Length: 116
Figure 1: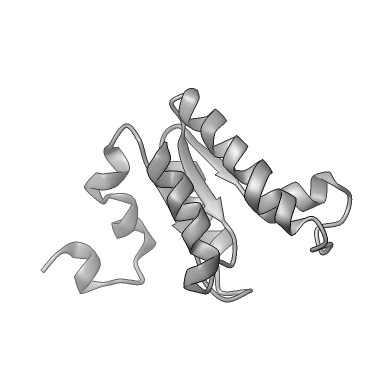
Figure 2: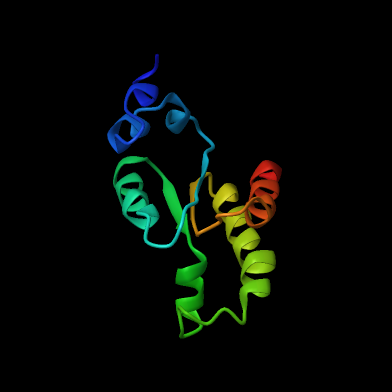
């Protein structure tokens, strides 16, 4: 049994996972609002080398309102993929932080990540 299987809630065990030591990693956080994704992501950003945060909430904030969902099509279909490609070109690892609670919402991000 692996360290993560023994204690799946131990975020430090997750940080020691061999996949995080690879040269090309895309971590996609998913979960309900308020479930701790961004908190977990903050730990990852402090620990995983060369990790770039890509967050639809932060992109919305660039437009002036983190709660404004009216640009989601642009954000998820253009801006997020463009930033993922840019991160990959810079040899950066990617941390995608969004609710992504259902399979349909994750599919686009997963497909972009596979293309990197």
